[in-house]
Each structure stands twice: as structure tokens, then as C-alpha cells.
Length: 117
Image 1 (tube, rainbow, N blue to C red):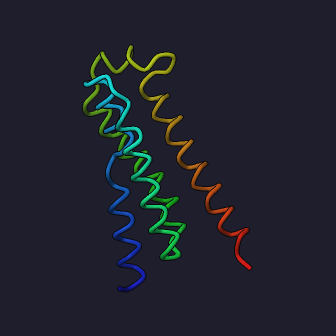
Image 2: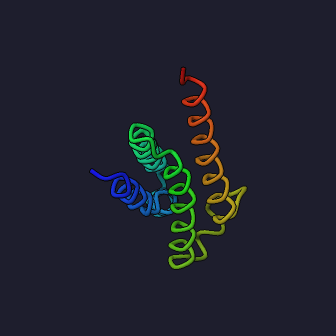
């Protein structure tokens, strides 16, 4: 498979608004289980990116999924979003989770680069 096709497939995998879905399911069903599923999605996509030497696609994809999550959140926003995620607002929690995902991927890239001979 051509390198650009692999990169495009990875970026398409990151278009899923993982953080929005996990926050939405937490809000509707009162269970934070989907945060683990979102983490698993991030890990799988990052491992695929690392295996195919597309680490930059992983970083771009992390930003992309944060933006898509924010757009979905604005579309599906209700009053419940504001009180549920205390001490944060929904947008603040989304920003914190996005930054954490980005930072974790940067650490993984740094560790992988350090490991190279």
C-alpha cells in the first residue's frame, strides 16, 4: 500500500470524535466506561502510525479528533453539558482530555525515537 494511502487511512480513523462520544455517553448513561474505549482507539491508531512510520499523522490526527469532538459538542450541546462535568465545563474537559492525549502521544514518540539505535 502506498504511504499516502496509509496516512489517509490513519487520518480517517482519527476523524471519529472519540472524546465527544465518551463525554456524551458519560452524560447520557452516567458511566465513564467509554473513556477507556476512546483511549483504546487512540492507542490502536498510534500503534498503527508508529508501525507504519507515520507518527506525524498521529499528532495531526489527535488535533483533528479534538476539533471534530468540539464541533460535535457544539452541535449536540444542551444545558446538561454545563453542570455534569464539574469542576470543568464541557469545553474545558474536552480541552484537558485533548491536551492529555496529545501530550501522551508526544511522550510515546519521544520514547520511540530515544529507543532507536
